[in-house]
Image (cartoon, rainbow, N blue to C red; front, top):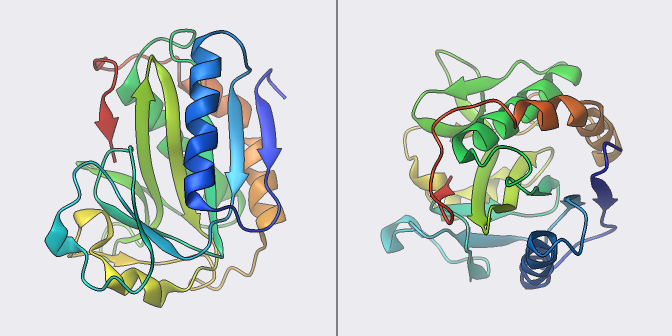
Length: 223
């Protein structure tokens, strides 16, 4: 599939184990010892704190909290949420981090469209939203890190997670917008359907990564 490895993890994957795996893979990709990777996982319930997380945005530490090397603030992961770890070599693909993030958002928007869900982006707010323009609700979060021009972390699509668990944090530092899921919108789909929709748009996503925007320095972090 486009020369990029596609991997789906069964069951629940622990967050520390996932981070260790993507960091090791990033080093191997940068060294030319491994292929680029799209890794689809599901985590047990937890919160992650990005590099810009503020203590006051952890409202209730009802779940385990893990420091994360990605950009951004607090986010939630848990059963029913499809996490997409995206590990691409931007040295091969234009060294354009803003373009990569925009392409990642576009991939998620296109995936949701294949599922019959209208979604889009909001200027100045990273992520994918439904209910635009009047009642925006975030349906997918984006959080990335770039090390030696290899991307780490990626996106989290709310398929059917327990939305009440988002109440323990200010998600991504945005207090004035709701969080939603495909299930909450009446879309009863399982991970296999979501994964197929993601796979159908992978080639377009990789092509879009090459488009030019404003390059950032290595190690740049966005949410």
